[in-house]
Figure 1: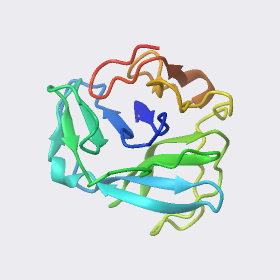
Figure 2: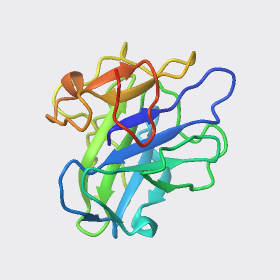
Figure 3: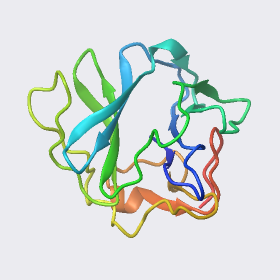
Figure 4: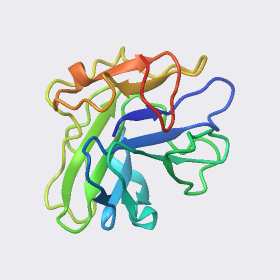
Length: 179
């Protein structure tokens, strides 16, 4: 998970979740999915199957977004028929990239608070969406302008949310993050 825009001014019709393949080899997306988590009750409220995208080439982006999001032409795109308010605004909410075959979490973000015990169907025990130190609640996508939460630097993942994530002044779906 590389960038998330979950809150815009006026109406939330330009929400997106961006994934990136930081390596040079393609990654098969069969059996992978994104789960959207409501932190107020620690349950999944939405799931997106990534299998339909086939594979993600090395150093490329995949953006999950509705029709109102302008995505860079070089990126893969999945439109799961998102219209408005598909990605909850928090506090506290989260997103996880999961392998539905091995039932493992590949990556996760918990924003505007810490989700440490979410119930995901098929997983034996509750799962934490916090990597390392939780992202401070003050690091949040604002409902003004076109900000987003993004990894900084782009494609960086040290497994420590407080270090890896920042507010980007401009959302960049399908291209490098610019904090």
